[in-house]
Length: 320
Length: 316
Image (cartoon, rainbow over all chains, first blue to last red; front, side, top):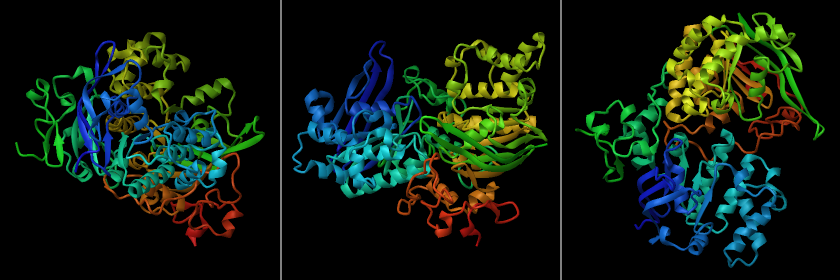
């Protein structure tokens, strides 16, 4: 099957001093597939996603790489072409719906704007919007249409964002920590809604989060990032049941879980480095139990093996 | 020695809306010395208000809070301060709880001076000692908070709380703002410190897995009331209240791949604390609700000797 999205050797730098933030990142998303990108703050997960839509902040620059969506390189697309893709073929939802929604514009107008900017051939636009709001579980769509974002709770605002993102039936939905700011019972409602809509529309999804629990329950395949690079990829079962990279394994072991020892958590010493500090070595080596000399003198490349890949000289569970 | 919270109520008046928010409604709790009480609940349930009351940042509207028999948060200013030093608070976000213009050494020294815990000559040695206790090297004391990582900053915030030589430490979401890979380290530190200084903890979090890890007893709060209380094992492995059950089922566990049930989701939202429904505050979302739930606020009653539940339907 051809890939819907292919990112090849993407590098993002700070324009001014060329410090690297995302370093040689490659991954792909197949049609209908849900992919989770996990990593800590500064690991480059959000920047990789923003690069897809050409939404990097001023001061950041894509240094090299390709981002192919249905075969065409988005990095070579004109601003106009990108505009026609954004919101229509690729939509995005953000962590904080209050800052993503316009506070002085009624919900209905904001959704209408999506349709207007894509000159869509929908004859009864208001009905389309009201149906969209109803589909995400908004009880009174007519009232919501004429309300402002501040009149809604955080969970309801996120529902509005999801309705907006699905309005033109995108093929790919990018979600950047959309449930992090929500309470757990509301998070479950939103995850259930997204899972249902994805299935119904056979939509692909890129879900960015630091929450391993969410990823384990929502996606098909996982990409683990550390200090600007991809360190491991695999199916959700491979990553959570037999992680190969010591970072992935360490992270999973460090989290308290039902049935685990309550006395002591397995901690990872130290803190994550900045991506530009670790260009030619394994970024995790100083914190790694398995590290040997080669890890702090050479950089392990991401090597694939069927459905999974790992960037480690001494991957776990693999005979040396 | 113990903390006892007796029938505490906290109301805030909102002038602009001409309404009253009942942040806490008749909370009664006690914590024995050396124990850890975990408090869980979603935003707006009153858990942080309770934290502020316990350390005396605000007085209760009604009821009393006592630490080994003497009241917290009701004294005149001077005695108030000295009582205070027995209870300290560690905030969620070490980025905003530390003064950005003060070196971390000065920040800890300030506590020692305020509470007159050391003479001028001993202060610098004590600062170094406190930093060592939380695993921060002495030469870091001249650094400013922005030069530290999130985990280090939270360690400094913990050292600052310990400087006052507290007996009770209130930890309000102490690891939620930290990177996932450094959370375990800070949690282990908290466990070590508790044993070393024989501290009593109130551990407040929305993250049930952290609460499960550290707590002896757990109280579950919903809209200003305790709906369930018991040992950690009773509350998490044998939850009774429908809200506690829903909360536990809502946690996506990384050890249980694809295990979360997206079919039977707790519907509805937490009601506005300024406009609470009559009766049980949970009845609009509750799968077990009957007519009487809409009329009367359920009392917290014993399911077993140590396990309390505020739901007559599950106690039948």
